[in-house]
Image (cartoon, rainbow, N blue to C red; front, side, top):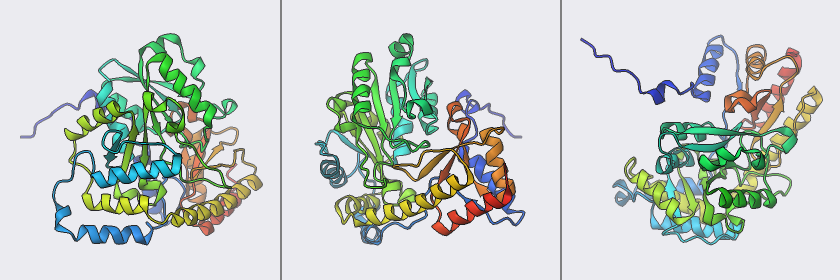
Length: 391
């Protein structure tokens, strides 16, 4: 006789994970024999650079790395992170207090609310935005007040428009630049406003900088921690996933305010056993090694961006060409919702894009294209849209 146990409320309240739903739709269309061009999920198609793979191979064959790793990360990896931040951003970090290793930045972003959010507490998060900001808060029993990213504000949150009672109650604010999904970048003046906002309202900043190393036309994204006072009010999440084409390796880190890093470490020590040590050795080589691979990766993305931007403009779409990330955030043609138009592209042209409302209500009216297929497939996708006359 089977048992019936009711699901927890936190699970009942979860919407279907956006990309799982898209995968199911893709599978249904693929069964019809359609050659699908997937411009949906932001998973780099280029391989991890060979010198990083070689480092993993060497470390994986060392029996010393087959045991439990350190909960907070190898000293050597945390030191490599601190060196990289110093070279890249001019930010000084104490590797023993201000750096923690993550099993991918998603894991750390999902777990930081457990350190600060009690049932009934409030966090702020941008919309559209990475869904994990909200679900992490929800798992901790809190609720999210969404900061709408609007075209007229350059897709930056209007911090002054947040109601006073919300500011008083909020404990965390999640922001992300260069931004997924809008591809917008933030400059020094925004980060200065963000630090003042955090200081004035006693709110911890959680900045997701996963796309800081993917940029075009000589543009160099900033770190939140470059801002005076930033290390006193928050932390920054980073990942090797997008930077070095290591999404499947699951290696990232959080850096910044020491007591916040330690609080996240306390949560992690009770939930996971740390990142595989051989992967961390490969991460050291990635961060400390020859960075010419990044120039090659970015050159390929810029080539794809230029083809995509030219084609979308030729077809009459409205959007801003991205300075960073491998996404283009495009306005849906009049007469369609985000979901309707994404469905039309899949059904009529065999093209997967991500509907903007999947990133939050403020994403309605847009769709996201990921430049994670080769240039010839991007060109073919543009031709298919043109031939299908989908609007």
